[in-house]
Length: 607
Image (cartoon, rainbow, N blue to C red):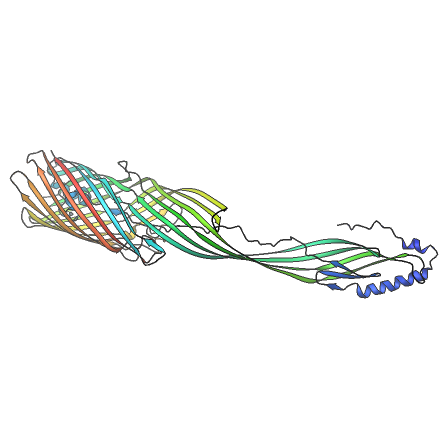
C-alpha cells in the first residue's frame, strides 16, 4: 500500500537558505534525532506511541484478517429422526383343514392331496383323481406392554382371507407299482405383521468445532496536524482461533405405524411311488414366488409423524493475538521562536516493534425451536424367486402303525429390493408462528437381495386303534440358525436385528404336535371329528418364543360312488405370552401377548 503524502510541501534546506544560520538548524536536528532514538519505540496494547520533535503521537493498531469469528452458530436444525426398526420372521403356513384340525400332526397320516406339503410319500394312499382347494381366514390380536413410559403401546389387530391350497391329483399304475402325480399351489411363508406405538424420544447431543488461521498485512496510516505530517506503516501478523460448542436437547413425540405384508407361494409338482407294500417315497419340487395369484409382493411400510421442541445452546470462544513491527517517516513544523525568528521543517524517521496483544471474545446464545416432521419408509421386493425340494417317506411296519419322515431342504431366494425414504421436517420459532427452516428429502435405492431359508424336518407316527379311531404324533425342527438376509455388496445379517449373521444367529426351533381323528360312520355319510394340541418355538433373539395351539375339526362326505365331495372345516387357536420381544430391537421392556384365530375350509372332489 502506498502511503499518502501530505499536500503541504516543506523544504527545510530551502528555508535554511533564507539567512538562517546552518549551525542553529543542525543543533535542533541533532537534539530531535537524540530524543527520537530514545523514546520513539514506546508501545502500548493496541496502539503505538511515536515521539516526534513536536511531541508524542498515538497511532491505533487493529488486528488484521477477518473481522468476524472463524466459527459461527449455525442456523436452527432438528436432529435426524429415525423411527425404530421392526423385525419379524416369516412363518411357515400349514395346509389343509383336515391336517390343521389335528394341530398339523399329519406327517405319518398324509392321506389327502395336501400330503405334497406335509409328506409327499403319503400321496400313494390316494386311489382316485382329486381336485381340492382350501381357504384360510385368520384374525390376529397382539397386546403389547412396555415398562418404558416413553414407549407407549397398545393392541394391534388384523385379519386376512386367502387361498391356502389348490391341487390336482392323478394316480396311475405303472411298472407294477402305484404312482401318483400331483400339481399343487400352496401358501409357504406368511410375512404379515402390524405394529403401532407412540414413542417419546429425549435426545441430547453435543457438537463442537475449532478453527485457526494466521493473517498478515501491511497497514499504512497517515497523521496530519499543524505541527506534524507523518506516515506510519504497520507490518502485522494476527493469529486467530475460535471454538464452537453447541448442545442440543430434543424432545419428540411420534405416532408410529408399521405394516408388513406379503405371502411367499409355491407351485409344487409332486411325484410319489410305492416301493413295496410297506414303504412309499415321494418328492415335490417347490418353485417359490411372491404373489402367484396376484396377492401382491412382499413389502413393508413404516410411517411416523412426530413433533416436539429443540433447545439449542451455543457458545463461541474467540482469541486474536496480534504482533509485528512498524516504520515511520515524517516532518515536524516549527514556528518562529526565540533565537529562530523564522519557521522551519525538521524531517524525522524511525522504526519499532508492536508488542503482542490479545483480544478475547466469548459469546453465548440460547434458543428454543418447535419441530414437526413426517417420516415414511417403504421396502418393496420384486422378482422374488427360489426353489427347493421336499422329500417324504411313509412306512407301515404294521397294520396299526405308520411312520412318516419329511425333509424340506434349505433354499435361497433372490429378489430386487426398492427402498424409498421420504422425510420432511419443519422448524418453527418457539410459539410456532414463523417458519425458520424447512427440509425435505426423497431417496430411492434399488439393490439385489438374497434370502436364505432354513432346513425343516419332521418325524411322525400314527397309531390306528381301529378302523375308525387313530392318534398322530409329530416332532419337527426348523433350523432357523441358517436364516439370513443379504443385500448386494454387504455381508449377510440376522433378519431379526440386522446384526452380522456370523455374530448373531437365531436358535433352531422345535415343535411337537398331537392329534386325533374319529370317523363317525352313518348310513349315508361319514363325519370325521378331529382335535389336536400343539407346542412350537418361533424364532426370536436370545431364545425362541413359545406358542401353544388347540385345534378342532369336522367334515362331511357327500356321495359314496366314484364321484363324491368331501367338505372339511377346522378351527385353530394359537396363543403366546411374553413373546415378540425382538420385534423392536433396543426395547427390552417390550412384551406381547398374541392370540390367533384361524378357520380353514377345504373342499375335495373325487372323480
